Image 1 (tube, helix red, strand yellow):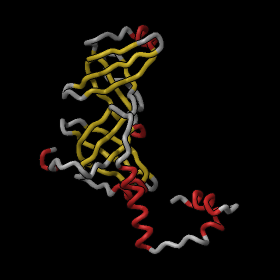
Image 2 (cartoon, one colour):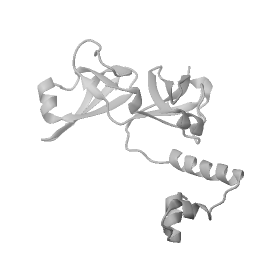
Image 3 (tube, helix red, strand yellow):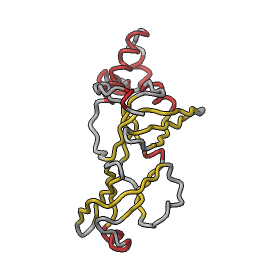
Image 4 (cartoon, helix red, strand yellow):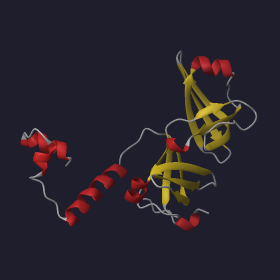
Length: 192
């Protein structure tokens, strides 16, 4: 339980005073850490844009690491996570993982967008859902993966986006959340 909660339950004015009553052995600390990590891994998410695959490479820096994930269909997705998350999740090359993205940016330009995004994919508009204020643009990649982007309806009209148009969907490595699901049983050998 977070120390601030213990502090409030005991009616103490500072976390330090509450901490003096709380003692954990090394084994208990590992059990608590595992509990919270497992609980976080089972959280549901609103992100619909996801790629399932395995970790190809990890480039570790002093604070954060660049993780390259290759999807089942061969797409390469780059994520940057903290080294603490890398250790907590037990990530290493070959780990099966889901890379989730909240909502990508889109561009109708015919050539690859020149931008700072690490992940750039070309696809076709398969669906448009709109109202007076917003538009939800679903871009289907060549492998069937769908990415859903949200823009204003005014922007959709200005860009002239219609069904079957070719678009670029892109997002930065910091927008990719890595999710380890321990209950999946897909064998690593199935993903090249």
